Each structure stands twice: as C-alpha cells, then as structure tokens.
Image 1 (tube, chains in turn orange, red):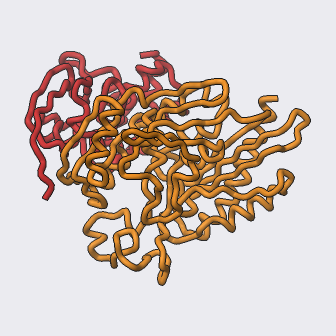
Image 2 (image 1 turned 180 degrees about the vertical axis):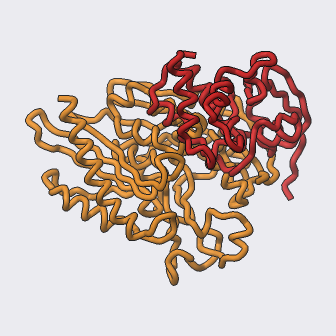
Length: 324
Length: 159
C-alpha cells in the first residue's frame, strides 16, 4: 500500500512546530511514531496536504517525577514508559497498558501522545478504498447512516486506545500548546464522545505533555484488556482501575475507566467507596456500548467489560496488599 | 492533486551511505527494496502487524512499512543483508538454519533482526522474554517452536 502524496515538514523545536500548525491548521497532520497516522493515510481515510514529523523533538520526550506530579512528554515512546521503574512502581496500570499496546516493535515506535490521540475505529470504516467503495457512506465518512447500528443518527465508532483509560484512572491532565498560548485540560476533556470528531483539540494545538498528579494515600492500579491474540491487536474491551485506601484499609477512592466501549473512555460512576464489586461491574456493563463493529460480537465484548472491571479492581487491590 | 516535491534523502544502511532523490511519501521499506535493491526486507501486511518488514534503526527493531525514509536520515539502519560477518552468516542466522527455524523464509529477516536486537539488549533472555520479543512477528509455517529453540540456543550460549 502506497502513501498518498504530501509535503513533509520537520520542525527542529516545539516553537517551530507550533508556527507550522498555526499556518497550515487542518491541512497538516502531526506524526510522532507514525504507526497510526500512516496506516490511516495508506487506507486513504485521510489525505493531508502536509505531514509534520514531531518524532525528533527531544524536549517533548521523557519522564520527569516531581514532588506533586509526574510529567510524561507526549513524544515518549511506549516502550520507555512500559520499562520505566518509576512508572512500574508508582503507576502500575500505566506500565501495564503501555506494555500491552500492539506488539513490542510497535511500542518501540509509538508514542503516548499518539496513542491517546488515535482516531476511533470501526469495521465499516477502517477499510481499504475497495471495501469502502462498496459500502454506503457512513457518518464518519460524511454520510448520514451508521452501518453498525442500522437507523442510527450517530456514529458508533470505538475508541481503542490503551493509554487514555489508565491515564484517566489516574486523573491525568494534558498540556495543549498553540502559538502564543498554553492550556491545561483534564484528559477527560480531550474527548467529545462523538465518533465522527472524537477530540476537542484545535487544529493549531499540539499535545506536548501529560501530567499525572501524585495520588493521595496508599493505592494500587491495574489494567486489563481483551483482544483476539496475546499481541498485536487493539483492545476489544478494557478496564483500568485505581483504588486508594487509608492506613486502616478503608477505601477512599475507587476509579474505574472502561475502554473500547464507545467513542471515548468512560469513567464508571462509583457513588460510594463501599459499593459492591458486582455492582460496579454491572454499572460498567450498562455504560459499555455492545455494538457489532469490531472483531468480536458486541454482546460478548460488553460482558467482558464487566469481567475485566472486576479483574482490574481485584488486581489493583492486590497491588495495595503487596505494597503494605 | 497534492503537489509533492522530491527531496534528497541520505540514508546510512548497513554502514554504507546512500543518497537518492525521492518523494517524501516513500516508506523506508519501499526505498530499501525498490531503490537500494535490498530485497531481504519483506513486505507482507503493509500495516505494521506482521513484522516481515522489520529492520533496525539505531539498533531498535521498527516496522519499515510504517517509517518514512525521509524521517530516518542520520540514523543507522540495519537490514538482514547487514547482519552477515564477511562471507559468513551471523550466529543468529546460523542458529535459525541449524534449528530448522526457517520454512518459506518470508518472516525470517524480521524474526532474525528482532532476535538479534533482543540478544544485544539481553544476552540471556528467558523463553518468556524471547516469546514476548517475537510476539509482533508472525510466522505461518514453523509454528514458532523452532524459532524459539534457535534463539534459546544462543541465549544459553550467551551469544
């Protein structure tokens, strides 16, 4: 599969990158590792005029731990996150998610920023032109129908990133820069929950850093995902859990985030810390969209969301016990 | 039609410098095979799944089908052709031959380069580490057992 034509931009620093996207806006697509963008281009899902390679911008790279927060550069390779002792020790779920993205060679290339900002997917959308030419134009392709849910007025494409659910479980924030200004948003605010346009980011903005606040108290975290093979595949259902307790083992926070269950990661509203595990799993099930638009049946994926929710919470609690 | 300009691309492949004029939309895989005629690197899925096109960039395995040639200028690229030692096969290649870890051979360049990178990083990997490292390289012939055996033989020798 050949790539469509484009003009190549390679800024040498963040300021230059911001100037370039300020000028070209929607005409430019940003490439970090390239593992998501180039595939979308090969399928002709996007045909940008410009491709801007930010993969070499070293000041957007690395993990920096401070007293109150840990900062991960958006260009940090997933392999480096998965292998970082600090991440493994303090943010177990993040290390687990990074190590389970696609395959090891992909994690050598792919970045955390690129993983967060990967587009939503659907078996009626992520296809070659030959396949798509035989299909009615769906919402995500500018049409008026959904091929996954007949009669639907909206797009049911699925967000299949691994990193956003775990970063949401840790209540992470993102730094978005544009020429002349910077804003910090909760990672939840990055998502629109609209499959057609999944991200609330301006065309002239660049995700540069992810900030993880230092969790309070004693805590554990875990990430569990369902996929066809033990490697390579995107999650078909996933759950991230963050659990914190007081010194006398009273649960203070239980934050569960499910993935591959809609157009954005979904935070399961755990009203009380004493909520029963089965009750949380049931809520996760109810929040998940079980649509037949990925490799496994939607009903099965939905059931697995509740199973993975329980497994992630149990693993997070076990992590606390091991640390005590 | 998007106007695209050709650019001079300088690549360091297997310790040799190549200069070519190419469009920026050429992948490293296309340039290696079509321009430099280094056809040991294989194209299969073309979407980063199978691992056939794996090459090393600064010693790290990457998918050359998802790498722009223009983006890896100034880096050391190693293909399967660059692994041999003079006229001899590299020990990793020899181990694959000796353990019958090759059948059709299409996945072998990617398997061998990934194994080579693993052994450089960890000369004595466990079987689990070997399987994990090779989990992004798909083989449709061998069933993987012989490939793992070949790498294990080197791990045991600490090569």
